[in-house]
Length: 219
Ligand code: 3DU
Image (cartoon, rainbow, N blue to C red):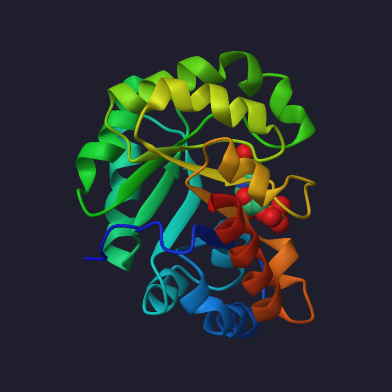
C-alpha cells in the first residue's frame, strides 16, 4: 500500500500527457521536486491502469478520476486505485454524501480529495455557487482535503475557513493563469501544475522555478 501524501515542496505535477515514454521521462525528471504526481484519464486511457503502479514507484500518485457514482461503484473504484498503488483519489461531492463516504471508508491508505469550485471559467456556473457546501461535506466526511481554484485565490481563502486543517490542493497555476504564490498565500497547501511543467522544453527547470516561487511565498 502506498503511503499518504506529504506536503514536501508543495508542488503537484499534473501529468496529462498521452505518451507513456514522455510521461515517465517527465516524472523521472521532476520526481524529487514534487510532492505527488496527479494523473487523469488522458494518460490512463492512452496507456493502461498499470501506469499508476509504474509512476507510484517514483512519487505518490493521485488519481484524478473525479469519481461520481453510487457508493458501491465508488467503493469498487477506490479499491482498484488502491490495488494499483495510488496514494490519493479525487472525487465529486454532488452524487451525495454517502458516495463520498464510500471512498473515504473503502481504503484507508488512499487519501480522498473532494472537488469544490473548479478553476476554469465554467467553474463559476455550477460549482462556484455551491462550493461552500461541497467543502463542508468534505470536512464532515473526513476527506483528506479539497481541490480549490488557484485562478480565484480569494475563494481558496474563503474555503479554508470551512475546511479547517484539511489539505487544499489548487490547480490552475500557470497555463490557466493562476499564480502559485498567490494560491499559497491565500491558504493552499499544495499547487497543481501541468502544462507549465510538462510542455516546457525543460520540465525540471520549470518545476524548480515553481518550487522556488512557492518557497519564497512562504518566507
Ligand atoms: O492547467 P494545467 O495544465 O496546469 O492542469 C491542471 C490539472 O488540474 C488538470 O489535470 C485538470 O484536469 C486538473 N483540474 C483543474 O485544472 C481544475 C479543477 O478545478 C480540477 C482539476
